[in-house]
Each structure stands twice: as structure tokens, then as C-alpha cells.
Length: 114
Length: 112
Image 1 (cartoon, helix red, strand yellow):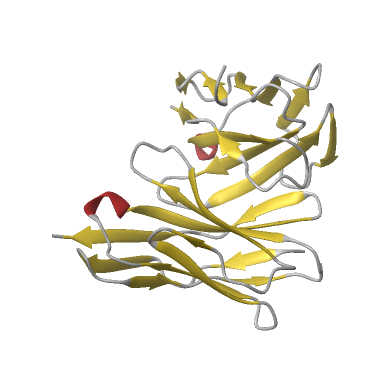
Image 2: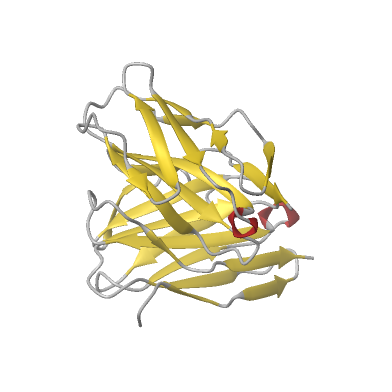
């Protein structure tokens, strides 16, 4: 596709359930970032991928959060045993390489845990 | 660790006037990039302007310009001739090392 695609755009889940959020970066982009944005707040860094490897996982808030990237393309962010405080918009961005000057963002997945 | 600070949670400006949004950052890196992103209510993040740290000249994109003070680690955004469509959340961001780090954002409201 022409841009970064995230799915689903909205997800409502019950507390305790697992969820998977998907990000399709722009074709050929090697760098991929996940962020979390709570209502009206800034972007909290979660994890960064360069190709399939994640040099920096320091932002993952707990061991309930994990992410993987396969084939240097699609990435999945998994949240296990969701809690209400996990409710937020999860944004994905990709850039051509680590030092490319522009990161392109998807429109995010709004996660609501009830 | 790199940090980005935006000290103005909200700003307002009259249409056609000029407004400046502040940003400071902290890093030990010498080579890095700085950005301003705009996030309108649609939630889509849009790059407004970028600055390479090794360039002394301030970046300019039409009505948007920056005042980059490397020694002071300051990177403010000036919006001239403000338009209603400029109403959005503005994020300052730093790219260095492994991270693209964002500030907390400034909500800008342009009033008619």
C-alpha cells in the first residue's frame, strides 16, 4: 500500500483477554516503531525494530506486552491479559532506515478495555 | 537517555497572527535530527518540518520555520499567518541512537 496500515482501527476487549494489533509498514521500510498515546497525551515509545530485530525494547511497559516482526515487514504487538490502563491509541510508524529523516505513521488502533 | 520537553500544554492564536511553540531536548549525541509533527483530530501524524543537527541554517517550510539553538538544545516552531487548519496537537521529536522520542505535545487552537 501507499502508506502505513494498522488494523483493526478500533478494538474493544474485555479485561483479561489477549489482543493482537497489526502494522503493515510502507514497503521497503526497514525501521518500524510502536508508540502508545493515551487520551490527549504525548507518544510513549514502546519498541523499535530494525529489520526483524528489536534493538530497543525498553519502552514495553510490562511482560504482558510483546512484539514481533517477520520478513522485515509486518509487525504484531500483542498485549496479554489486558487491563483497563492499557486503553489507548497504539500508533505504528515506519521509515526507510534508522537514519531516514521522516517516519510515516499509520492512523493507529484505538484499544478500549472494558 | 534522550528527553524532549514541551512546556506549553496549550496555546491559542488569532487567525493570520504568528505563534511560536517551544521545545527543548536533552542528549549526549552529536549527530541527530529534530522534527515537528502535527496531529489533527483525525489522529493522523503529519510531518511539518525537520532539522539536521549538523546544519546551522534554520529549516523553513512555507509558513513554518524553526529556531534551532544547538548549544541551548532548543528547537522552537514558528507558524506565520496562522490558519484555522493549523489547529492541531503539535509534537516535537528527536531522532538519535535507536529511538524516535516525542515530547508531550502542545495543543494549538487558531481562532477566527
